[in-house]
Image (cartoon, rainbow, N blue to C red; front, side, top):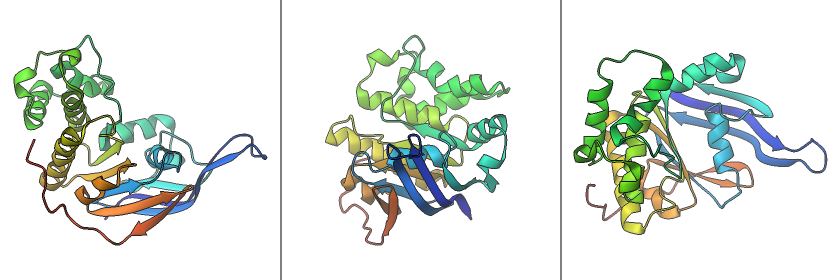
Length: 238
């Protein structure tokens, strides 16, 4: 089953004249359910734009984007936002946790925005923080954590809505090598245990081995990389 499908997708910035910049060029892409897709490429090649267009955060100039069987640019803004809230979780490069809230409250925050009643919200937040190794720090504030610990909280927050699709934009670029491996091992474990579909973009080619599939982006286009190997010496569980 296909989780995300792009057909003929282009994204240009500018006025359409000589100053226009094509961030995406006629992209065709299918992300299958339970893929852990790693997309690599240099800065400015269009990786983040691809992620934003695929999730409805940026409007394509051309083409179609289908998520969970729905062509997302054929529905209203409200319906698109509802689809994102129901099916997607996001892990960005920088944690963007709210400093005045505890870790538990930060993880629960997406459900507060959804305006839906969830009787088990607090219990689920605690389970997720425990899963990422921070169950003993429920009441801590973000400034009391290391960068790697903050990113663990972000992963927990991204899962609070029980999404089927997790989007990660350079989730380890601000981390040291050891912490990067720990974060990637958490993502790989989540993918394996929860049958979650993951799309991750990164400039770090060493992270390709954590996924199940690899694409390279060059000047707004994507190409499949058939060579893929699992890490020979996986990081210790975080």
